[in-house]
Every structure is written in C-alpha cells, then in structure tokens.
Image 1 (cartoon, rainbow, N blue to C red):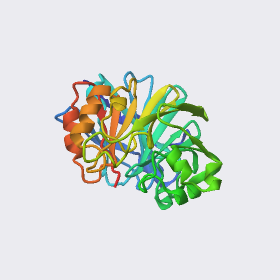
Image 2 (cartoon, rainbow, N blue to C red):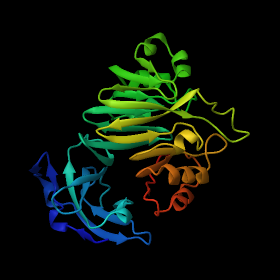
Image 3 (cartoon, rainbow, N blue to C red):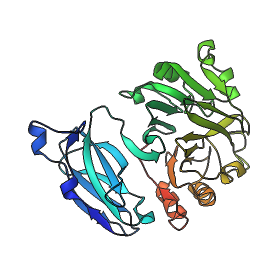
Image 4 (cartoon, rainbow, N blue to C red):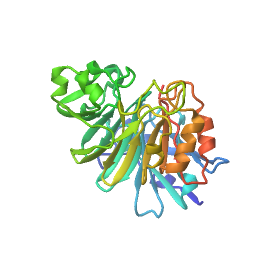
Length: 324
C-alpha cells in the first residue's frame, strides 16, 4: 500500500471560500502519519480549536470521498485512525474546513451522496443522508442536543436501553416516521402509534427513499433464551442510495444474521448476559462479511479482542468508536 499525505492540499475552506480573519493564518495541516503494524494509518492533525474539519481520501487525486467529519481539539492533538487502509491500494489524504453545525462522524459514499454515521451512546446512533436524519434506538433526549430532529426512527425492541417514548416525542419531526415491532407499538401512546409502522420479522417497507427490512433478533444460548425471545424484536437492514446497513438490535449470532448478504456496514452488539460475546460477534462477522463493522452496545465487553478475532483476512474493516 502506498500512502501520500498531501500537505499542500490541506486547505482551510468554508462553503467553498477561503477563510478570512485570524483563523485563516492557522492553516489546518497534518502533523504526522504513522502506518501501524496492522497496516492501519494513524493521521494526526493540527487546526484551530472548535472548528469542524473533514478528512477525505482518494485513490488517484481525481475522485475524493469523505472519511470523517470532526471537531478539532487544537495543538496537534486531533487524530483519526484509517482502519480501511489495509484493504486498499494507493491512498491520498486531504482536509477541508466545513461549516459549523455539520454532522460529525464517519462517512459512507452512496449513489445519492454521502451518509454520515454519528454514534451517540450504547445502541443509539444517527445517520444523516440526503437531507434526512435517521435515528436508531434513541434513548435520553439530552444526548442528542445540537442534532437535527429525526425524519425516520427505527426502534428494535421494548427494553429501556432501546425504547424511550419520551425521547422519541422530543426528538421526532412532526411528520417523522417510526418503524417498530408489534410489542413496541402496543406499549406506545395513541399519539406515537399514529406515526408508527409495524414490521414483523421478515417484512419490509420503504419510507423517504430508505428501504427497511426487519431481521429477526433473539437469543440462542441456553440460559439466555428468555432475554430476547424470537419474534418480539427487530434488527434492521436499511438501504440508502444502494448501500445496505445492518443494525442487529439485541441478538446473538442467529442463522438470520449469518445469512445476510451484501452488507456494507453492520452494527453488532455484545455484552453478557444479554446478547453476544465478542467471540460470537466476531465469528458472525467473518461469516456474513460486512465491509465495515462497528461493535456497539458493548459496555465492558472486550472490543479489542473482537477486532483481533475478526482479523483482516476476510476483508472486514472493524471500526472502534467511543460509545460511552
């Protein structure tokens, strides 16, 4: 793998124009690049504190794609680990300033623009795509402060770390669509039911240009079976601009999970005694082979062990992010 860090192309931009004022004298730039022993690339970045930046990558200096949008911490302390690097050839990087208020997180290129993946906490995350905000299992409205309200909300099951009716009421746009299982629907207020579509395992629908498939989520290990009985909750596969994203809900490594195909991004839970071990989750990832996998809902589980067990030999990129 060849890597070129384009320092001259690290340009501070705001809405396509050069910045003016004191910040303009502090041109953002990469300060270090380190190829790790596993061939991942650690980028260190220096820029004025409190501004938002976007790192992009390119294989050829012609087509550029977003890696991440992030707030600078200043003093050269901002860094990003490019865990996709082991799976690609030549790699170029550049950085641009983006407007304040932009959604931060990792980027996923789709046929209709980029999706931005923004972890919130535990099982909650947000995807911004095509001018829409998609919320997964939103819990505790205060954690979403500063984010645009939801246009589409996916809720996996009734447990309190996944379903929070007060948070949904506070975070949804007036015309937002909620997709949930029957058990969740039955526990909702009449007002929330009016915004909710029920999917059972195996059913699918489409809202706002987003394809949604309900995937069975349940426990399979003796002693855990009553935690999440089959048919009560949903994992989901959503399709955005031709990209398929799987969020497993609370599940073990079921036959339905292992049978998934063509998954671009997956969110796999782990934490005992409720869901999977890191070993189970890694084994499942090596079977259905998402292009990218995020461990989430992990609490004290060893996500570094998960990453080691997934390895790099089957083409699955593991992204470790801060969820707590």
